[in-house]
Every structure is written in structure tokens, then in C-alpha cells.
Figure (spheres, rainbow, N blue to C red):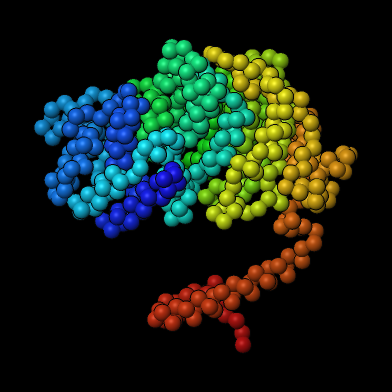
Length: 553
């Protein structure tokens, strides 16, 4: 039985939850509260979980032999004990702050004992020996990704595709001994990918000394997550991957744009996909007073936090929407400050459709604090910005056309074609600080056949063949003189794009749009009457007359 088979079997348990009246949005939370107890049991049996065991009376063996109302009541008691550390009588059950954080405010919404019993039996029937070979952490992540892929679930709105996470990690090449952060951790995908990368480079950490190994599992990684339920998933995910973190785990509960973020120590590596949108107050509001440029744009605030929180020579890869590249005013100020204080050496223009918020256009910015010659430099650190266009004339990605590793391999190949500057190991080592020996010209995905836009500044005075390349370099001076420090740099024409020069007159376009609206209104009016809503239809007609005025016959 493969991990994919097991993930599907686990996901099928959602049918049981639905039969018990559990809301779709609560499926994964309800499932993992029980699943984690089972996974701790399997890891303990296999001898892979040495720390943070569940206390006596709160283990899988305290559940899987029971049935009926006793089973449901015992499960509720276990969740309460894991959450508070005490049983119903106030007797101390455990004093592990990480277990308390994982099960903070945990409670089940299950009402039918038979449904709980059915879930327990299904979990007991899974071939956990096969699952162990790939790691229970990978199985757990597969379940989170499955949840994100379901269109009905809000969990996947900004879920970062696994292939993109891996590419960002491969490009930065985190090293043992480095402090690695994600200020918008979600379910900790970036931090776990960094840990797995380091394990792959150190024979599963066996090449490290005991002291370094302890640092790697308890101090190397720090995440911040605003939503308690998501943080619970992240803590479980990290622990199942052997990442314990501090006393309350790898991921802290808090707001990176508030005091929690301001108090973070400096990092060697930051990987992030900050939430999109603007600050509207509440827990997610921007309350930092140490950010130079005040803004309600959360991405601009996160970007400032990230480059400010890097150590000299520290490096970052961050997913940001297009508006960060071209927004005027504060946006221009932040970009200039970034290019002054950091070497913004690479921008990856991502295709649309790879995030579940359809239509959002995104990019990955790769930068290093300081310049290639002086990590303490704070002015004019960016000399050239290399841009890889993975957006123009790419497929519309989604369930039918999944975005995968194969789409990112050409970018990885040109990102760092030579031995890395600053490659090393240990505290402060720079795995991939300033990629060198790059050459323009990369023509994957038939870019040599792509049309060129007329009069694009990016294509003036260059070799015609190079204009078709997906991989181009632009000097800091050119960006200032020709783009006014906008980083919205594009030189290829998408086959689906509309040339404004060939559009009809505005009056014709407006007339066509109004004609379509009138037709749609007529169809809606007929539908409402067919559904027996004549009064509402008449009301809408009266409203339209008031808006448009009486039309003479």
C-alpha cells in the first residue's frame, strides 16, 4: 500500500464525518486529532519517537478496544487531558507544553459513538509498516495537500505547491547550523522541506555531532502562524518529521506583523509565502512600529520584515503577487530599499493557476542581505536582476494539468550553473548567497516560438534570438532609468493577451458589454418567474427603470 493509497483511505473517512454532521471545513482538524494519537503510537512502536510521548491513559491503546458511549466519553476525556494537562478531577496527567500546544482547545464534534469506532477500526486496518518506510510525516503532509486540493476547502486558498517549495529550498541550499525562519508558516511546509534537504545532505543528520544534531532538531527552525488551528497542524507536522523546536514547538502562535515578529532573532535563511490582501484590523493587523515604510499592504509589510530580519549575508526566497513589483508610492520605496540593502539577484515569474486563488499572478523573489563583495553593505547592493519568465505561454495549471517538478527544472538549472559562492557548513554558512557564472538564453517550453510585443523597452537593442529567451538579466541602472524602479519586467507576448492597439473603439466595446448584460438580465428575469418569484422580478424591473430612466416606445 503506497502513501497515496493511505492518504486516499484517510480522506475517505471524511464521509464518516459528514454522516455525523461535521462541516467540510472541520474535516481535517477532526481527523488529525485522532490520527495524531495513532501516529504517535506507530512511531513509538517503531522506536522512532524518543521524546514527547503521550501520557498513560491518553494513548491509542486506551481507545481501540472500546465501543459505544464509553468510547466517545473516553475520547473526549483524552482530548481534555492532552489540552490542559489535567483530567476531569484536576489531577496532573502531563506537563509537556508541546503536547498542550498541539491539543490546545481540542474538542470533538462527533456525536455518534459508532462513527468514532468506525474511524478507529479503519486506522487500525492501515498497513502502517509500509507507511513507515516513507515516513509518517510525509503521509501526514500528503493528507494536508489532499485537503488543499479539494476545491470546496478554504485550506488550499494559498497552499504553496510542493514542487515550488522544493525548488525554493534547492536554490537557497540551507546548511546545518543555520537559523531558518518562515514568518507565515501555515502548516510548516517550507521549514520541513528545509529540514529534509539538510538531512539529505548529511546522511539523515548522522554526519553531524550530537551537539549539532540537537541544534538542528530543537533550535534551527522557527515559524510564526496567526491561526490556532493551522498552527496545530504545523506542530503535528513538525513533530512527525523529527523537528521538536523549543518548549512549545517549532511554530509560534502570533502575528509576524506585530510584536511576535518584531521580537524574532535574525535569520540565516527565510522562506515564505505571505498571505495576500490588505490589513483590515484585528489579529492580522500591522502593528509593527519598526518598519520604515508604513503601509496597509500586507505583502509590502512582510517583505520589509523579511529583508530586515536577515543576518548580514543571509538569504531569502519569498512568494509575492505582481502588485508588489509595480505598486507606486510606498511600493517603490520598499523596492528601492530592498535593492539597496540586499542583492536582489533573481525573480521567478510564476504561471497562473498554481495557487488555488485562481487568477492571482505571483513571483518568487530571491535576495541576499548585503552585496556580493560585502555582506555588511547597505547601499547599492543590487547590480543586476535576473528574471526567469515561467508565465508567458504556459498551460493553465490546475487539477487536469498539475504543476510539477518538471516545470521548474529548467529554472533550477540556470539559477546556479556553477559551484556556489560562499558554500559551506556551520553557524552562518552561506549555502547559495550570490549565484555566479550565469548566461542569458534559455528556451524551454517552446519560448523560441513565442511572439514579441511591439516596442517593449526590454527588447530594445538586443539580439532578436535573445529576446525569445525565458532567462534575461537587467542592470540596476536600467531598472531605475527605464522602469522607474518597477520590477514588473516582461518581454514575451502571451498568445492569449489582447493587443490594445487592435481593440475596437471604446463605444463599441461598451455597447457590446451592455448588450450582453441586457441579455443576461432577461434570462434572470425569466428564471425568477419560473421559480415563482414574480414579485421579486417585478421589483428588479422597477429598480432598473429607476436606474436607467423610462425608455420611450
